[in-house]
Image (tube, rainbow, N blue to C red):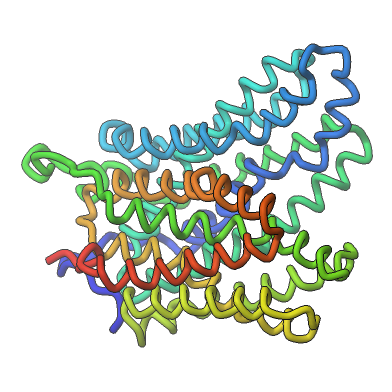
Length: 397
């Protein structure tokens, strides 16, 4: 059945604002991984700084923890400041702390700026989803969540290529790409109707506020599962292809692009899919497709079969993130949705940190095959948990 919601409908966001919010999706990935092409040049320039290589890697790896902090604190701050106002402040901080590195010559200060950008990135992502899930009518919300996922994946590929192109003129120019947050912020600020960030759905009155916000541990668990499954697999497939003698860069890129294509297909079709299946059914199908695809990939050395398996994996992958946010939104009252999304997004970012040590142990002891098999087992466990904990996503009355 389609997503359900309370009888009261949220105030509609203008179309141009919805597009601008979807434009934030690639900025999230850009913040976390966008400096990867610049890291060798930065390490070379600061080679005389003690522990330079560690500090440069911390500019990227430290973003996960900083993003979790930003996601956790944003919901509480939004209840006091207002969602739209806080979102604009965080986008400004994102641009300043990112592009500001162009002017810095101290590696320690650069690391601090990146960590602050991670906090802003985590908070801005939560608020964008809060607006999309609260201010768009239920019958169109799932479609926009699908578009949000597609825009994030496709936009990141374009932006990472832009970073590489700018780096040809020097690594500092690559950081200027973070200024893209400014036009996004301006578009959101000018297109939202006056007073929207003080609307009752955003900042409830004292009578509307719940007596206490309970941490949605069940939803956080699903966030951990979805975050781990959506980000760790692509790290181990190249090693598996290398183990079977198919590890050339063009082959790896071809396989990953096929999975990305099928993932984009199901994410783009998410609104249509959710109009026919419930959130629980969609989770079950998605996790089952991921498990089946990975088992096919890990069970054979034939490239044709691997490509088919990875395409099946991509079909499931494209469903889990938009379905996670859709299901959580449908099971949460609008006035605590930002707080809920903060915890769930923290679970998404924390998932890889929790799951990767287990996968690294499997890789070191048994090879990349074992890591893929472990992820497939986690997907099967996720199917069982979905059925067992289905009441977590009961629609609010």
